[in-house]
Amino acid sequence: MAEIDIVTSQWRMVEVGRVVLFTSGPYTDRLATIVEIIDHKRALVQGPSTKENASIPRHADSLANLVLTPIVIPNLPRAAGNATVARKWEKAEVEKQWDASSWAKKRDQKERRRGLSDFERFKVMRLRKQVRLILQLQSALVKKTMPKKLHIGTRT
Image (cartoon, rainbow, N blue to C red):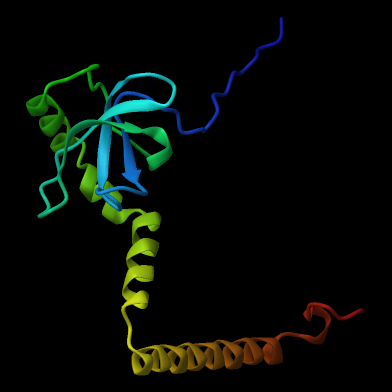
């Protein structure tokens, strides 16, 4: 008999312990975790954040207002109490994982850029041009030192 390896999908499932990001409503751009699944459109969520003005009280919310993140709090029991959720949140270091993710870094960068003045946007443009020029010069230098036969895009 042949061996068959079953590989699970990498989809983000709605599950108890899944960390979510609010996209609309009064808690926009805050993290919470799913504590209980109410039905196919709603879930009970809670966000015991230690950051100032970032905690979310336990309430039912529509899944349409949430985005599932890849972060999961392992072994979170269904309908766990406030203290249990807070303890598991700290143990899993959810905020540290979120801050280290590229998703959070891109959101922070967009927020910073959104708050720039006209002159600051001009300075960013000039810096990007300088970086692009340096990269072009380095690329040209590398191409110049390469033997003719190894040039990309040329026929031999």
